[in-house]
Amino acid sequence: MNTFRRAESNDIQNLVVLINQAYRENLGRSWTNEQYIIQGQRIQPQQLESLLTDPHFELWVCEKSSDDLSKQHNVLLGCIGLTHDQDDVRQLEIGTFAVQPDYQNQGLGRQFLMFIEQHIHHRYSEVQTINMYVLNVRHSLIAFYERAGYQQSGYTEVYPTDLDVGIPAVEVHLIHLQKNLLE
Image (cartoon, rainbow, N blue to C red; front, side, top):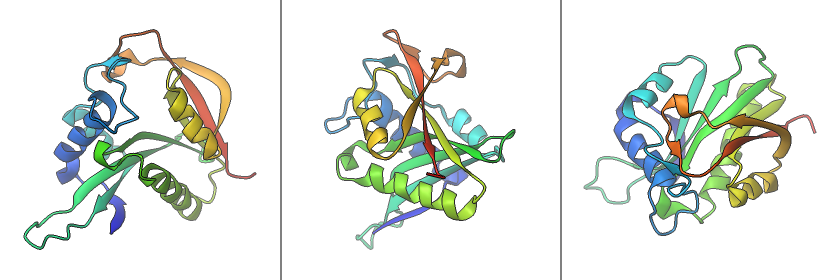
């Protein structure tokens, strides 16, 4: 059974592996892989630790309970982050969204996105818009979000090489997507 919960500091090492595998390693079933687009790690332990202590950020994990009684831990299947807009409580940003490659293409990403949208609806009733940024060359990922009701705003940003999230191997920029919760 899959459950959702807030990430904790003892999740950091497993989350760093999960996020970097989902984004930067070419592991069979992964369709989120950016290995040929962005080089280098997607996240470092100290970056994740900093995020987890940021009062304007929430990181949620999805985990699968182990059926094996000899295992004392659950398996992390994915994560998704929410960043609260400090200047506008009506907006939240989704990011740090990753699904463990062995569990991709099974509907888990859509399930996770639905969970976080429901969480936003119930916990943050003032939120009117969910924002996210996606690499412009990730056409299948953009299409996934568009099927989920997100729309391209026309706004773009330069890839943030200063944030130590990898170096582009090809020319890329970020596309802003948004979902209006009032519609």
